[in-house]
Length: 518
Length: 86
Image (cartoon, rainbow over all chains, first blue to last red; front, side, top):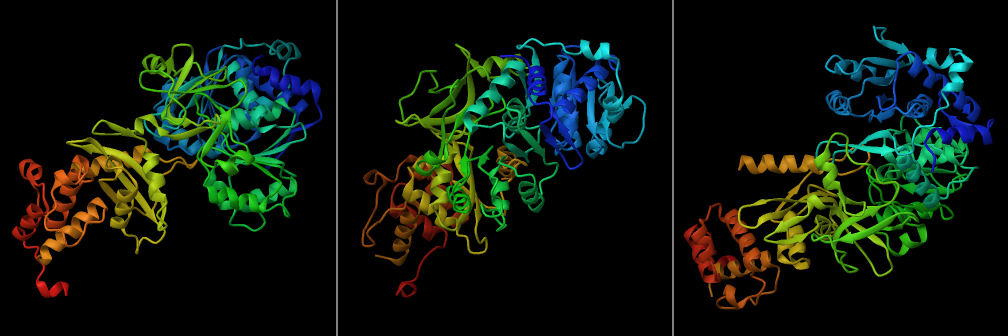
């Protein structure tokens, strides 16, 4: 395993004239990509004196500048800290303060958010602006750095090779259940995760991938962009998701594959043009971040009978662990699949012993893609790892007799009702059997006698006619008493983040506020 | 059998989601496995909700038969006149 700079250097050597990146504004060959990275790396060192281990925050939408910055920072053994562009200024401030970034590369689209909080971030010394921004001190121009001819000697010296175990990325968890934590991933971790994606998805040199998910997200970065550069494919970087625009890009750029969250697939299904007749170049669709509903899976397959539709399980701390192939998904749509070769997975009980097939426990993962821990959180890092290098994912699940894994939910979400523990997903599945219910989320709420009981938030297909009592009666008929929700509430919609993940913290906050008010 | 008693049986059947013969004279918790400790707590909660009252812990713990629930219904003015059910 080699460090990240070898990815683009090898691609430059093997396929210099192949198109590497396509954006709204430009196309870059691998030769051009490498040249730009070298100039940018050179400027980071010569202009800012960025040293190995320095953290450089990266605030940019999907763009060539994002990719160039990522590779330039890691090429000089810096640590890149990608920041989700959709965060609020205060959330951005928290992340930058937490990562200790001394430098920031900021796209004009995020400038107003960033400039709001920059004055409260004394650690951020220098900023590199992508595009047109208000000129202020300590702000340099990305285009100037990338286009300025550099001393050939300087550039030659830039081809350093960071150690494979050096930290390359701070990837922050999405914080669906608590404050985001910075997962520290080394060069080797990132490349191993990329290798997992190549083995699982079978990326090819001829592939053209449309990257719709934000590059600041682990999945887009190491399971889409990085493996695509490794195989010398082409990445079409989609800055903003727009269904009609994406369909046109897939058609015009002869895109062969893309990865998206279930909500994106659902939005595309609204358009009749999202089918094999209109988009004959597509060969592979990859679901990400949340389970895809069986019906949506079937609907997509009806539109694209020959296209492989796969799913995968992973987490920021261990990206891309399993693969659920199309064929297996037809028989076991609720499974997350099997471990990718090179990844070990186990289901463990509270005593840290393996549980029998079919029984629920915590999912543990081991492999070279597992991160090094959380930035400046030693206690959380200790808690993250079990003896033998196993990562405690904090996810609950089970394994069946065929070796297929199933995800039940987060361990912290497990409801302990009078000593009897169960995953909310068991109740959610039961409620979803009720035909009037479109969506549901179940979580544990405090109960003075039982410790915890289930509370269900139900989205009815028709809220006016939705009958909460009928839902409770359905649960009481189908579930043992400790799993029947004590509280049930009809809501307009469930809170989700931009990737479609349920924001349990929002529901918990809301339920606690309600309980306090009673 | 009073109509209020029939309403209590209907209430218990609804909360516990089991078929209870409508002509049953009295239903006691100890004779009925579905009326377990957790369902009892849920039943109390539903009862408080239906009657608009708050039962103290002793009252809640003592409540162990359909007759007691019927008495509670009557105490809080939930009665069903005979003609209402015909």
